Length: 99
Image: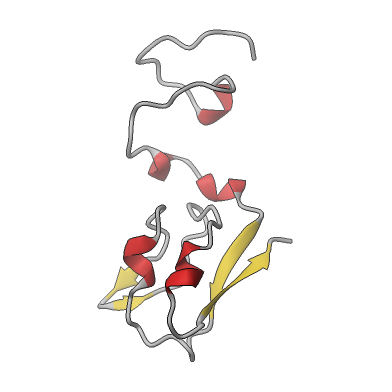
């Protein structure tokens, strides 16, 4: 795409030119950024001790918690960075390829 994007214009991520700087934060919930992932985290519930150490380190807020228990990953927003794997002291989270 060769058109310039005006400052303050509302466009989708598909319309942004390569190298464009995104200056507004907090917009990732509007897009399924998980489409970018080539690997994804999975967790084994029997190994999980609900310490919730993985939750605050997730840059995409893709580990939902309800009633102080972590739920399965929000794959619509998880980009597969693997930070959660490093934070889990119980080995309950592993990365796997996306089919």
